[in-house]
Amino acid sequence: MTWLVTGGAGYIGAHVVREMAGAGERVVALDDLSAGRAARVPREVPLVRGSSLDAELLKRVFAEHGVTGVVHLAARKQVAESVARPTRYYQENVGGLATLLEAAAEAGVRRLLFSSSAAVYGNPGAVDLITEDAPCAPVNPYGETKLAGEWLVRAAGRAHGMATACLRYFNVAGAAAPELADTGVFNIVPMVFDRLTRDDAPRVFGDDYPTPDGTCVRDYIHVADLADAHLAAARHLSGAAAGSDLTVNIGRGEGVSVRELISVIGEVTGDRRTPVVEARRPGDAPRAVASAERAAAELGWRARRGVREMVASAWQGWQLHQGA
Ligand SMILES: NC(=O)c1ccc[n+]([C@@H]2O[C@H](COP(=O)([O-])OP(=O)(O)OC[C@H]3O[C@@H](n4cnc5c(N)ncnc54)[C@H](O)[C@@H]3O)[C@@H](O)[C@H]2O)c1
Image 1 (cartoon, rainbow, N blue to C red):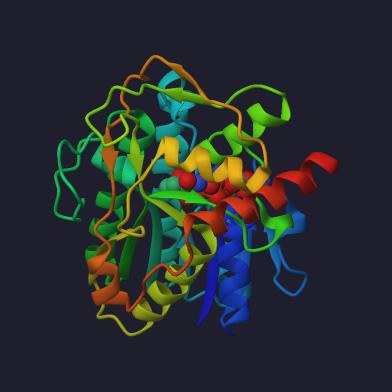
Image 2: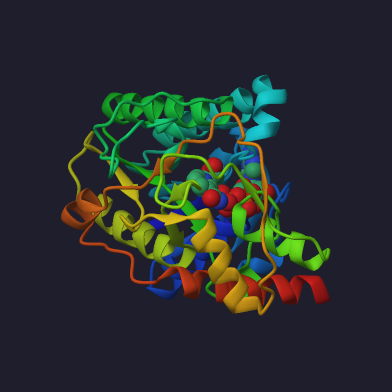
């Protein structure tokens, strides 16, 4: 098989490209470099610069590289921006996916893996572990585009005899190598690093939630484990029946509170200043932790790396990019 990885120069995409190529899969990366960096893609992997909204380009890439499977990660991912510019998010995340699916079907591609998100669940209420059968009720346009994307993927899979998988990532952190680190400041780990680098205390948004220490509880997953999960899912798809679909959480199944995470960051960075508590942010669920059982049963995959490893590897990457 030859896999096209869209968003392959992005934070997660570059890890997926490296993992799949390292495991002997043939891989081609596509990225418009709007948020990615070409240097993240290994030299031996062809990088096509262009957009997944460009039907003609996709047609060419599928033909020239003999693509037989797609891992679709290219998307806009900033929640606040999605609230301000919902049409752009629907156009790029849902419209881009429709263009890609059409081109893939025409080219005879029969395997597709889609980057979804825990954002599809919205505020899951008082559940210990979220299973894939939990109701989906996203609370922002970003999450809506991921849920609509899943519907579209399953419908197109059925219509065109494609085996599909939707991976719902929980909170991704860490780096497999410093140069692959997340350079955006949208997730909690880089946000705390950013505060510390500016000589400010980390911020905690609300400490009166109904959780053991009052702060929100999340399921953090190392990006290297997430890349392993993609490889496992790609191999699962290679043997899956035409038109079949799989929807699976990718998390550790363990909750970590914001206070606990900040304390690990303090240990790793040596900067243990006391966080400042601010008002709750609208839309933040008290607890969002994956059930990781379906991924184990269907893909034979479980996360292996813990929170300390995530923070330590992210910190190395942060320092490299600060010095750059
Ligand atoms: N980072 C997380 O915590 C997280 C959690 C859940 C889901 N996801 C999803 O994982 C995927 C990858 O996220 P990431 O964190 O690596 O983000 P990222 O911004 O680093 O990567 C996205 C990549 O896609 C590229 N891209 C965007 N639009 C494109 C287009 N139309 N055509 C070609 N390339 C395009 C960007 O240049 C970038 O390299 C996204 O679909 C995101 O929604 C991320």
